[in-house]
Image (cartoon, rainbow, N blue to C red):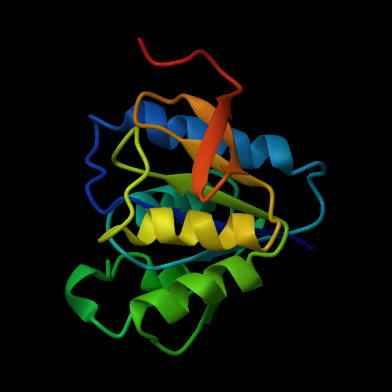
Length: 169
């Protein structure tokens, strides 16, 4: 079973971020090489990117995705719309531990949808999760708010990326 870890901004608002959402769903479909085997999506159950991508995947291809929810212990940002579509709901954990679990359980790829176009070192679970994925040698993709898709890699102690689609203007 293909496994994908998903993390992103809580600031995603539709329709403003429709390009980011559509590009992420398209990337996931591109990584899914066959229509028969289910794909495990490990996500953080927070409002915004995690929930919107998950709800779209489940609505567009019912039964294709096995959704594994990793909620945080702090429930302020949990989006209750995603909880019923989770095939498996892990016990809540503190944010950083939960983020590491998303990388570990979403073992084949990590996809991040950040709010920013630059790496944030403090106060961003998405960028933290991206760093964890790269440290674990997971292929990691970043989908920016205008739908640009990039492949992330380590450059010294920082995250760098190479755009696979057109760069932002």
